[in-house]
Image 1 (cartoon, rainbow, N blue to C red):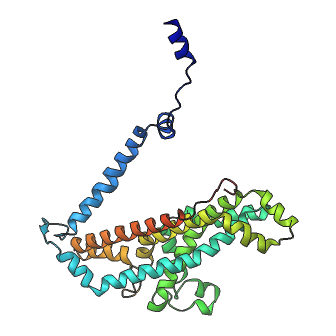
Image 2 (image 1 turned 180 degrees about the vertical axis):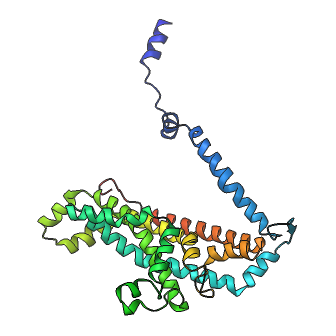
Length: 310
């Protein structure tokens, strides 16, 4: 017996399987239960209700009645739906093209050392402190041709009706959106740039690389995941622009700025057609999920080490 006990004591401890070891030593999955419960109650349940309403006829006051696929057929056959989708796509693409280079360059600039850069960063982040409604009211007053900046400063090139011209209103909306959100994305790029090791730039300087080559060969590659994260927030977030556009233009003039979120709101609460509004809401959710999934797959397409540069 003593020999058996000695052999058992000398036997090497069994090495746990890698997956099992991580499960035993990592955080318990039960820690995610509160977050999943909140997400289910406040996101999944309302989304399910909206999906059900898209198959019902309801004016928002009386009792809803079953309509089957009538709301979907009407919404998909309505040219106004495709016009709203086209406007949303324009805002999404142009906003990304405008905001990304500005945010990237400002993030790189502000990430450097220097008192004037810190002062610029503090001043430039002021839009993040203002609500979308306040920003819309301010720009609406500033661009007014009767008493706005054109009258106050005698600027003739600003004297036209920016928000009353159907060809200009959408681009004014995109400009105001960029003014509001560029500081946030600048903050993302600033943090990303500050995570890049200085040794990379020092080695590049020893090799004779200038600032431009360092930017394209070090900064941009090291920021690829930050770019994807910022782009995801810009593109998916553009599907939720509502409050700023509602206060700034109300969807006008005509339907020049009636994007999909605004069309959903106006259909439901002004047109008393909750079925069509719910259908548009489901379309928005599907488009947002597809976009987020595509960008997520893009970010994981080529997994590289970020430990050296981030």
